[in-house]
Amino acid sequence: MNETLKTLLERRSVRGYKEDLVPAEVLDQILEAGEYAPSGMGKQGTLMVVTQNPELVKKLSAMNAAVMGTTSDPFYGAPTVIIVFADSEQGTYVENGSLVMGNLMNAAHSLGVDSCWIHRAREVFDSPEGKELKAQWGVPEAYVGVGHCVLGYRSAEYPQAKARKEGFVIRV
Image (cartoon, rainbow, N blue to C red; front, side, top):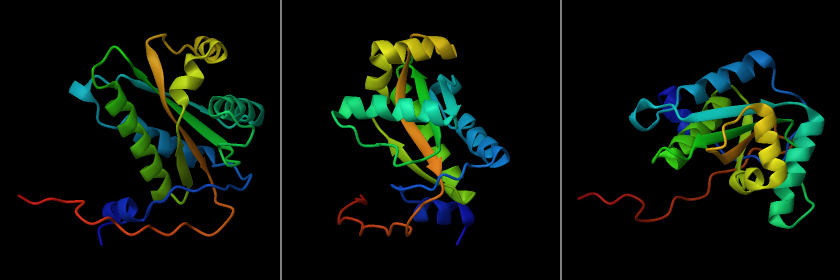
């Protein structure tokens, strides 16, 4: 089977990570794949903020948990977080950010790195604390959070694919 198709068919979300960091050279390849995601009219209205700083990862996780109304770790112990932001002034901003997220997760899998898309980035960065972080990082106000892509190496067995539902494809 073609390696690209194999990656697309085999990648699963992982919800439990070891503390081991993704090496810089591997992380750079994953980020480059995110940069090359398609975007509406080629406008590239997305940006990524990446951290492996344990204090910041913990803070971001706590902010995300607060949106959910819990104190659990929604990042599942992942040591690397990439926040994808997209320019809300572009009509395709959600799609653009989603394509970046997909590229990140598929590239990670192809390099032996596990990942999971964590929601609530929009709510996290709509908060006063989130807006303050965005300003600190130089993220323009019009950019909204699309997702947190957590990366690392799984701490348990690799998840199995669920059966595909009937009628997923309609040929006409």
